[in-house]
Image (cartoon, rainbow, N blue to C red; front, side, top):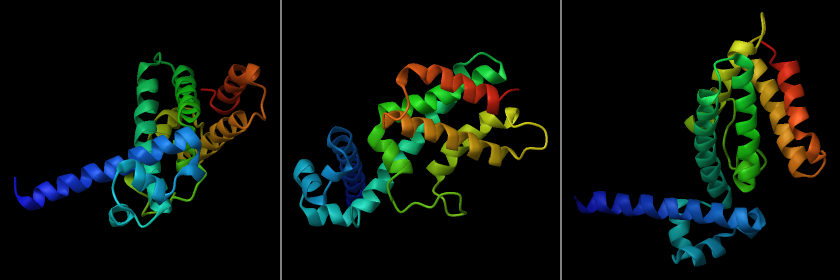
Length: 193
């Protein structure tokens, strides 16, 4: 291995450490606790080293969001693949997997959809992990979009409903005992085959 290859590998390891540490700190204490100073202390590198990887917190949030999007895409596809071979069952599995991901990873979910990570959504230059997460939704929802309904538009609307459920539930604005009924209603009304 050349010196250059070793340096690139070490750089990649440091970058993954920064992202993992930011994610861990955000999940434990919230994004306000994630500062470049605290990250530098936790990873035991100087702030200039941290800044050699990311220009600041915004880029770190973006990196966490991209990692989260990749994980969400895997979770959504796994859930739909494991579901019975019926459109409603696949859509229900997709919706549950989405809501479970949001509940289990609140700081990552915030990085993906609430905080400014400097990422473009729904543009030509949207990063591939974000496109893939949307594609994981689209793959399942296309078959239930309905006659004459654009699958992408339907997916955006269904995603918005899921996001609303995830956000309002987390904020304590919706009674938790009705979560399953809400999900059934969403699937039955929006995604009836």
